[in-house]
Length: 252
Image 1 (tube, one colour):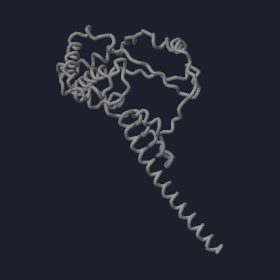
Image 2 (cartoon, rainbow, N blue to C red):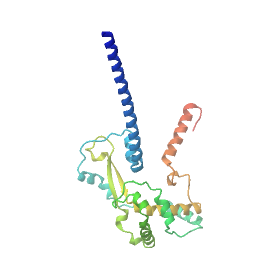
Image 3 (cartoon, rainbow, N blue to C red):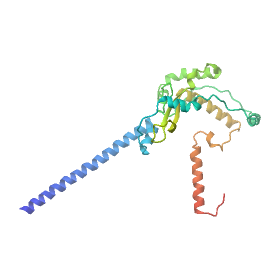
Image 4 (cartoon, one colour):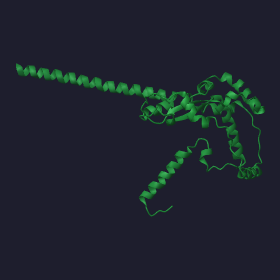
């Protein structure tokens, strides 16, 4: 009788453990699915946050310095009105480039060009002082006509460009766990999205102009759109290092 009761208890225990394992596996799958949905949504809406979460960056906690300390520390950079001095070599290069330019086309503001710029912008990039994210420029196409009119006016009359257009919103991101030191912050300035669209159209025109007149040094990857110049060079350096590691007889 005791043996039978013990077998029944073992059976009930194993059955309960099997049910527990089943629900535990189901819970893990449910959490994995929910995380996948959450991360996909996060990637679409805020890629910066997505990378911070997935790369294991811990949330930094502590008390930040008073804003007056930041202003005092960064005033030497933020309030510096010095301009790049004109060098003799700049005039020499300008004369050489000028002699090669034979095809000059007028800069025109057209809706199809604006569309090509807007569609490449990230939807939820941090906006500037205007608070408008790229998503709204993409969806509210009824505003494009007024925006294009402003762009055309600014091209013809640069003095009419409003001062707020090029103003940014600066965010200070901590670089280390020591939040109390104002030196340990990295400033990132978020510019107005309409400013980026406007300068993007100008940049496209300049690239097309340089390409038509063959005055673009394509070996300078930092000036090419759609190219990760730094990453490209790091990959090349790593490939050379791996090659040298395998064959030490190679000399540079």
